[in-house]
Image (cartoon, rainbow, N blue to C red):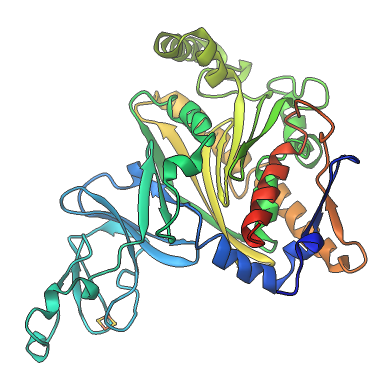
Length: 419
Ligand code: FES
Ligand code: FE
């Protein structure tokens, strides 16, 4: 390997300096190592329980560079199958989503049940007896598949640690999200899909970067001045945490309404009554302290390597995957509590689109920033390092510091360089 660890990451504890090599964002060699050592080894988010309501429901996804069918079979078992025909390789399902008892490969017509079993093939008299029951002729399941509170993950490394151990401290934060939904959470609407001409790790960093909010999203905070009074001071107040295993979170207060029990004036007196009711129920279920944390605090959670769960003015799930060092595809979904009041749901979806949607206040600003950084990396031979040192001198880094990113980079480096 040509690139050395010291060209990639430079940490000087005494000087409180944490430098990330810009080579990591542009190199084909690094990109190939990431495919092998990260996307083929880590647990990767594939989908949510609620996307598969009834037997036969399926969605197809690209996960970790593989084509996957995420499906509820006729026995209501949720499976993740590789979307490639055991015959000669075609993708047996070419729809994005739907309901099916079976999948028929369009090339030569092999038929698979929704559990992946080969159940029919044209001209079967030309095959030996028992051919159809050979498990190798059925769709291949992904090596590992597990779920945590409705979030399904897959892993292409049979020897990986359990999902529960992998998520580790991040489970506490996923719990704070899922506990909002007394009757379960559901994906609302379809998938938002877009592409960004930037390295995928820039989006990982951006997803829990509290530092950029007041500047890069100044338009949004100016707009909030009309509804909530805007930022209190010039920053978001809260903490930034490295959760281990590369996961991280920022948890903070902010001047936007949260449909889960944080009221703003713009929602009117009726809204106040509804929100108070939701809050009272949270207190009943979890006690005052946890209820207050759930309702009043925002969380941007990043699960290594490429899952973001934002619990802010709405709930969003987002994954991203690189197709090249300077190009990624992004998928995003809105998550909401089942049984939510219609008006609260409307406010939630408005919040979601207004800030998080591809045409909202935040996403275009962030894409512009990320693509601009990527352009800046053209100068990386002479200007080699990104600085991720903010808050390194503090015992309790804040939500606008960069502790959570340092945890991410250490794990990234450990995996890429086998250290
Ligand atoms: Fe699927 Fe031939 S490639 S039936
Ligand atoms: Fe942003």
